Length: 338
Image 1 (cartoon, rainbow, N blue to C red):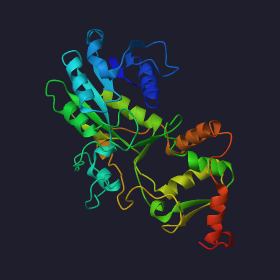
Image 2 (image 1 turned 90 degrees about the vertical axis):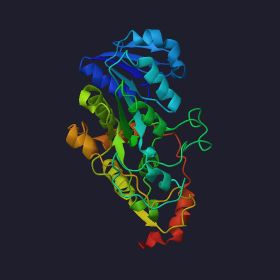
Image 3 (image 1 turned 120 degrees about the vertical axis):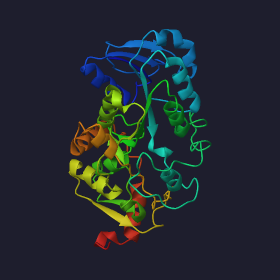
Image 4 (image 1 turned 135 degrees about the vertical axis):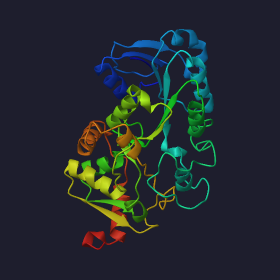
């Protein structure tokens, strides 16, 4: 199969590329060439800025891709350009979206008030009523026009060029740019006796996905033609609470300490969202209709993540343990009072 990937040089993309090459597919990668990567030489490369995709239309169309995978469609304009350039020159497009399209995300982040949404969230559940969730909040070039809802509409509404939308959860693993597990691993490495967790976060759940499992779901979607015109949630089958996740990391780290849930208001870091709203995705559709299964077990995913984090910890811990010790003293935890 001839596959063209837009982006794909950073966190998830290299795993997608590796899986596709292992199956013998013909890959072309369109990217800026600014990311240092150890990708295989068995890939055709086209260098360019995706914001100027149309300027490369002639060479891109000559690929005659069976599937176009857009790893980085942030805005409506991004999606429109992909549909324009490849319509008639490719069979299908697969676009990476996010769980942030759901109304539940809007409630969680207090973007707009409303009732707590029922979980798990199905692909047909209500979407946000407000657009551009990161505008003015994130100092990144993409943030001003970022809107996955408009990306999805553009991809799904073209009747002549079938599109598939994949809604991703929080993705973790080696090379995670957000290093979602770092703070816990660092504390465990430093043999802290306690990790303090706001009680509102202890039971809170959100869907996550180990990077190689997310990549395998992306690849499966690309290779199965009957996924065309579908929206699919991707994520772990049984999301864990924050307390459960930290304990899982502790098992891998052989950490002898204890996670302590502390009352609201004791920790200085204010929780920036409403923990009454969880962000759990229903992945029944991709599992039962398209027979998706994780390639890497949950325990193995945690182990690989911990291994990478330990190899990339800073020389000095960034945390103020004196402050934490004072908090423990205030709560009388040193005497076993919880």
